[in-house]
Image (tube, rainbow, N blue to C red; front, side, top):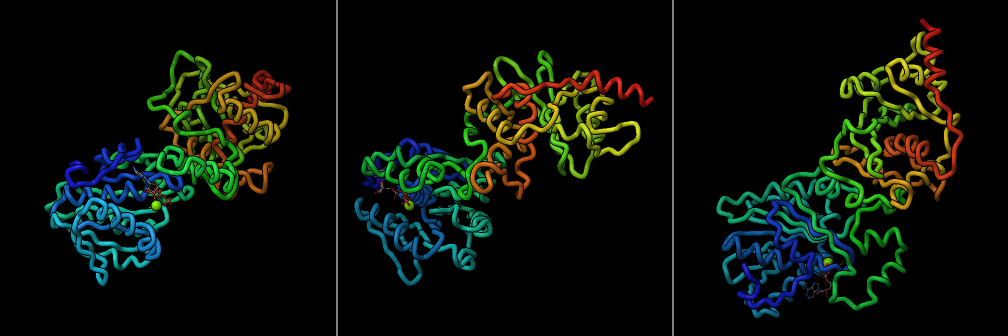
Amino acid sequence: MSFRRLGIKYRMLPAQAAFHRSRSKYKAYVGGYGSGKTYAGCHEAIRLSVINRGLPGMVVAPTYGMLEDATLPAFLEILDRAGIAYKWRRSSANLMLPWGSKVMFRSADSPEHLKGPSLAWVGIDEGAMVSRAAWEVLISRIRHPEAGRLQAFITTTPEGYNWLFEEFVEKRKKRYRLISASTRENIYLPPEYAEDLVEAYGANLARQYVSGEFVNPVAGRVYDAFSRERHVRDGLEYAPAYPLSMAVDFNVDPLHAALIQVADGEVRIVDEVVIRSSNTWELCEAVRGRYRHIPITAYPDPTGRARKTAGTPEAPSDFAVLSLNGFTVRARNSSPSVRDRVNAVNRILAGGGPARLVISSACRESIRSFERTCWKDGLSVIDKSHGDEHMTDAVGYFIEYEFPVRAPQRVEYEGFLRRAVRRCF
Ligand SMILES: Nc1ncnc2c1ncn2[C@@H]1O[C@H](COP(=O)(O)OP(=O)(O)OP(=O)(O)O)[C@@H](O)[C@H]1O
Ligand SMILES: [Mg+2]
């Protein structure tokens, strides 16, 4: 379907073109302020009303105010400029297009108005601001039996890690597609607009409001350099040609462990284990189940030298349990400082150090942890209230030991533990 045939002159920005091209059933144009979201959404609505000629569709905004002030005027302006003769019924908030399609304009602040007859398509402006419940009601309505294309689309600025992030990014669902757009790419804005926003919001929030990235807007991310584009790789798996290591954080429920290989200048997180209400024995069993006869070096939280989650007489500590299960154990004498650990990880993430970090796309907990771990109160204490930090804590014990920013005192426990274990039998 071409806009020109309707008399609409539309020179799309590259992100807008990608958005219109996508045939995914659920698609989202996620961008900064002024990145052309509403403009793209209105055009997409017109397009779908032509593809689904004669059938009803719905344009939704989070509130009536937003609908009246931004979305509806943008929509009508496009029609007016193209000389398209529409009928706007204010009392019912329905728009009739000359090709027989009806566009219903609704706000998500009264979800009962969203329920009702079947639709061919739905578009939500500033969709990250509507509730998950509203989204679920809306997608349940796109089921019109005569529809040529059933689609639901969102145009929005990200709002932290909410349901939109889960559905469109984290779950990696097949029929969902996200197109990112930056304010800087909108050539129709005044040239200083994006930089004014950066100045007003600061670098962290500008990532959300200008670059259109998902960030935690409340506090700074600990692993700020992490991005899915740079650090996540599909199909990354254990490669038998390289040694295998395991980074462990014992002190937590669930227990977290990352399986790591260093190869070709890369620190690769190839696998991960998360087990609830568990102990070190079960962790060993789970890992040994996957990597039966493979030598593995463990890099645990150094406090496990004295602590035991296992509680058996023959194993004096978590380290001994690892050793009994055939792991070589490497850890520092005492826990490295949080700063040292985070600095070592961030250097690897930034790619400027001795190796680069890559994570298998199958390691969802690791990705989540790199993405979400945040500082609490400034830049010294990690926020532990959501439990996001466990996997990156574990990975930090490995990276800090092998790639320290400051040279640490290394202690090999292997020999010591073998002797200790032998004495136990
Ligand atoms: N392809 C385009 N051609 C011409 N003008 C465009 C195009 N895309 C966007 N614009 C213009 O850029 C400006 C910002 O676009 P729009 O309002 O769609 O952005 P937005 O991301 O919805 O902004 P906000 O964050 O304020 O809601 C508007 O004046 C719009 O008309
Ligand atoms: Mg807008």
